Length: 144
Length: 144
Image 1 (tube, rainbow over the protein chains, first blue to last red):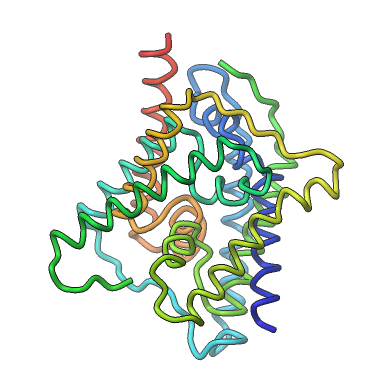
Image 2 (cartoon, rainbow over the protein chains, first blue to last red):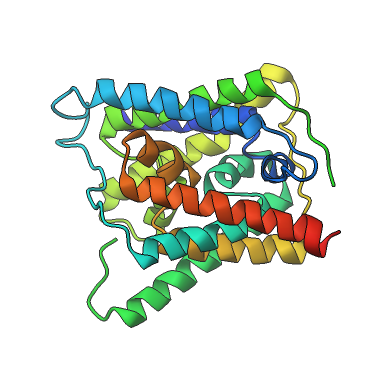
């Protein structure tokens, strides 16, 4: 039962992504191209998503627990470190080059466009390459 | 340079759907709607139970373009300005970045920012800055 609800949540997310323009690299890149063919649409995506989530979370966190789990599973770390900032800086470089971010690309797989599959395959190479490096530098088994 | 139409209402509506999905995933199973974490977790799930919700969300996401097609009669526009080698390079860089940075636009930019997580705010400001810088270099320094 809960998996059907979770699937529907994915459908809402995927629909929102393709409606918003986040799945269109030309639109994403134009958002950042203030010096060229600027398209400010993505500010409205971020604004709409942030305000909705902020209000929604406020309501949801008023509950003791989620509907189908014993507790909320939310990251608790608050410290800023080089790994977080360096990784985020690197992510931005890739996003600027390709125009796809993970949340934009995954729903776009449903269009069947080969470019999206090529990007996603390359991204998985990056994810597993980075994980392998992290495991090398950290001999203890890494937490998933 | 590829011009894209400014779509404030459509983008705002898509953003609200993204926020609604983030809220509902927290309500139903107490999880963050982060594309990076959901995707990466499928390949290293903590349990069958853990893998099942991730796959359900992903299948839902991929259904997004079909919903768009049912509603509008057309596929969402996807224009990839990057050449294929650059698209693949960008994909690998995104994969490395989101792994070290522990998240992307959906996880940090929407869910984390909505919780006012200092890590997510710092990560989002960092990748927005490097994305803008990368787009400037690609379009106006190298691309001319």
